[in-house]
View 1 (cartoon, one colour):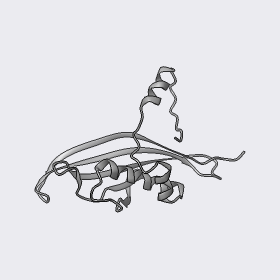
View 2 (cartoon, helix red, strand yellow):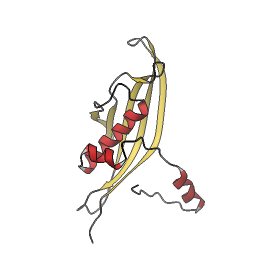
View 3 (tube, one colour):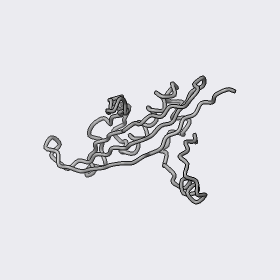
View 4 (cartoon, helix red, strand yellow):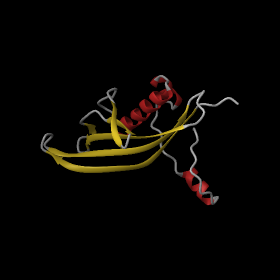
Amino acid sequence: MKEKTIFSKRLLYKQDDRAYSDHYETEISAISSMYAFFWMIEGMQNPITTRARIGIIYDHKENNTLLLNPTIEFWKNEAWTFFDDILQNNKEWTPEKAEQEGLFMIESFLMGVSINDVRDRYSDEIIENTEEEDEEEAEKGENVLSFRPK
């Protein structure tokens, strides 16, 4: 039986905060988005799960301007390990667009494919997490955690 390639992600939770920054001399905002990934490439016997966090610092008073390059971290050996900065950002990007770029980067890295192939797969648009499927499963009375590719 031939194993198939699978990739799925799920937003676990988001945290946000605002605080005054002496450096920027204004109140700034931060978002930390926690994701679970489930993936398997051809030839693997069993899928792998991974946790990743995307951190974004921005100025909510100035059109949500990104103040620092957002970061990606992976949970590894009971600690967060820095993975990469999201350097491809355009100064016009919103925090949501920067987060989406981080998700593209993570999928590209884990699956070993070009980031442009990942962007093309999603039409380079921000992907909204739909909760409708979860509600439908809850109505069925199933108590099963499932990961499915889109």
